[in-house]
Length: 282
Image (tube, rainbow, N blue to C red; front, top):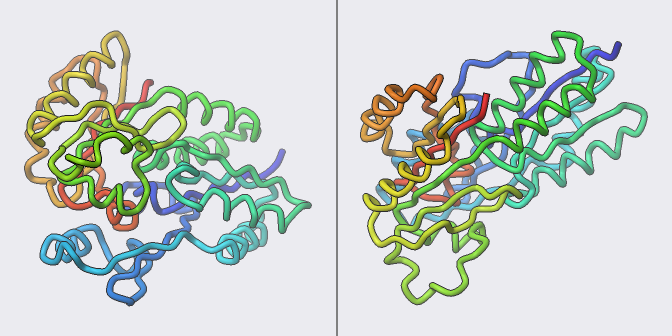
């Protein structure tokens, strides 16, 4: 039986959750006014959103983990005794991380390395990694693990609201923005992470309050008859989302409500004031 190692990219936000420390984490880079920061290690969510809120026009850009760095991580895992690897990444439509992980795997042809596209981000991605590690510890085969990950990937949904679309449009992360550029920055639309892992518009709404209300209504309709774990993704708005957490915890279909911050590298493309509401079917 193979000894299977698990790794996940930092876009999962797993750094901010209780997790198995044997899960390797490879993190993207954030550049603020020319200075390099490793996500979570050198800059946290609170620090990042505080800086962006105080200076909305600050020069920020990101870089995914290089193929070389990922290759080094694979080598370290192999030297630690793993003879098969499962690597979970953010959606390939949102970052080049998946492609870099695949390229790094091709540099080690004699070891099975399975790069799994979560087609999502944040809590969904973190859950996939934690599930893979738990199953690996239970001596499940890589195929059994990958089959379970595919099921989880196909049985979740995340809705998103943003304070402004300027960050998503500027960085090319909004897949269906065409058709409403004339009123772009007046909108507070309801967005989603689509089934293929893109940020897509669900509805065009003009106020954040209405967008959040529609998000909750759609969410409640969608989870009817399902048993789910729920999660709220926050940026610089944690305090105002505690009421939503308490409201959701009263709903019988919901087993648990987790709170997770949107990491700085992902938040760079969404902006402060962003929030997400999602679920994973049990």
